[in-house]
Image (cartoon, rainbow, N blue to C red; front, side, top):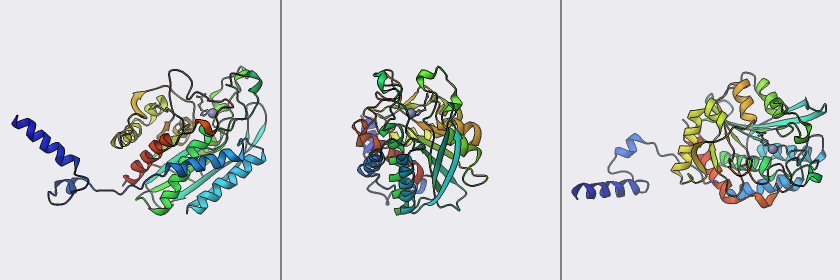
Length: 325
Ligand code: AHN
Ligand code: ZN
């Protein structure tokens, strides 16, 4: 009984530790209290919608170019040093894509850096649509593309208001979603992620390095569950643990499930293999479908985007980056 009371007393001390710091002293010595800004998920939602409203961001179209200008302008407005990488990248089916990677650097002089990635292009074909007549229709990519970028624009807005200790690079990659069309009969990994392959070989700053990287892909869907992605686990296990632990500390362990899931041939794979920056992918996994219900279909529009998922991902990211020293 005495033990139980002691445990209860200890628990209540820990539970109110956040408010009443000071007199006991011990906590203050072992932990530095970091002010982590509040991630505004409504603002992130608005940034997702702004991209989707422009239309499908398929290379060599005016909507793509308009969205690229919008993203560079937002990063500029939020106080980043902006780099544009323009590259002509050949697609697997013999086209030449006019691609543009857009990078926003915060605290560009800092040696200790974390890189945050998301692709901003949308898939030229809804080749996973149940209706085969849609297989050559470009998708809006609200979740697959715009969601990660929307979260990172809100992160950028927060970075302008409160600078973290380390340097941050927000990297919007182009030409991710141009991999082999389902009906082509091909399955070449290298046909995907052309923008990240280019960036990993030719970073925006010569000799660029970061402690680690975090890629966001399809982070706005209803009922999203993020498991440790298979290649992330192989290349950057510690980063997975760090991020999932931060999510748990915020009560988001219903979104960030601490189990190993399947692998995705995604931008992080090339960043790990070519640039050798340990990089994880935050991407949903499901037993019922690939990534999310409307993946690579014409239904990947604003109806699939939900504010609470954006909040869980965005707040977790802020928790991680403001705790880096
Ligand atoms: C595959 O694993 C085939 N694709 C993951 C990369 C991707 C496509 N991300 C978004 N769209
Ligand atoms: Zn895709």
